[in-house]
Length: 324
Length: 168
Image 1 (spheres, rainbow over the protein chains, first blue to last red):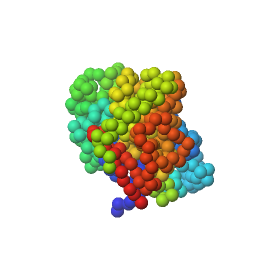
Image 2 (image 1 turned 135 degrees about the horizontal axis):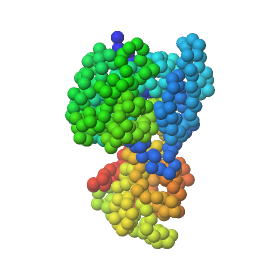
Image 3 (image 1 turned 90 degrees about the vertical axis):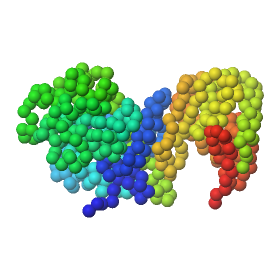
Image 4 (image 1 turned 45 degrees about the horizontal axis):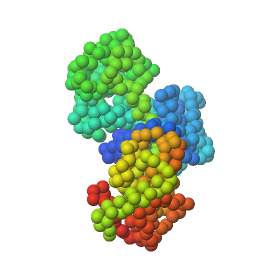
């Protein structure tokens, strides 16, 4: 049974941003276009616009994160919102009840937006379906499910470098199994209509259902990145790895680590991306990570504009929608 | 409806008035900034007519509007483009129609987030009644009295046409 998409309001506008899956191409393009105009705000001497003045954004992090939390914080601050950073240890007491109590307390403080990072898949959906109606929820990564703002900043970076999505071949390399980033990227890339998405990795790190998402699977890095326009490297997630999925990091690097030599079979103008944090010498060689085709640090910069776009889209127009 | 030829004449009149105003104020070589979208069209023509050297500045005030909580954000926002420092500059701010004054309020706020100009002169093609804020044009080519439900809008960029409309 298909449920109503809780991410959208009655007018079809973004209310929560929980996953890329199920959103229209038009809406994704709107996010990219809006982000494009926010990218210019950094050229002002006052790097701030007053859009969310008087609003309160809560960064609710149940799992450690530096880059995502700081770029969400900067994005909110550049929109003139007040920001509260709350880090909750996921191991603390029994979660279900604690979580709802935490939410109730934050609602009582009259906050407007929760940015949620959680190690359990579905946490952001759970929170979005329990919050007061005036609160927007942004998923900043839930378990191995989704990381939609990361996927959109990656799309933004690809569009900046390649223009049109239609002719592109994009390869995603590494630990697809545990990667919420990969899942969100695959949905975003296919919705935006790229020519081909390839996933590359050892059999143990590629889930069996992946074919149903419309991607091509490769187990050889060299074969997989031949002729692609974009190479997205994923972090090897030791902390999510249980059991013997990999023989060793050295062997992984030997087979799937991206080096200049292996990259030479991609298109000459191919760009290399990585959501960070990077493990140098595990999934990517330093000469590639710091090389001319790497756009890894641009991804970080773009993350701020994309998060500004998503936050302002989710919080704008609410009073108009309710007839005030 | 006013025809295209009339608009070009009106812009010429505006250019003459602006010239005179700036001369009286002792302002030489101001930088010109148009407000999206109609203001940019007028500013382009004024820049040529006045023989100004500096590149045209473009301002999109969407992020500074006071009705964001009601109407939300327009994804077609064009980024503002101010290819010069505003610090200690004389600025000629241009819009097509001055109505409530709210657009100009937003534009002034945005300009000050880019720097501290020496002065700002506001030039508009049409000054109509209906002000809701204490904001006046320094130079206007035309003054109109319209009923509250009557609206006037510039369509362009080529040709530029003024459109009168009524809504309830």
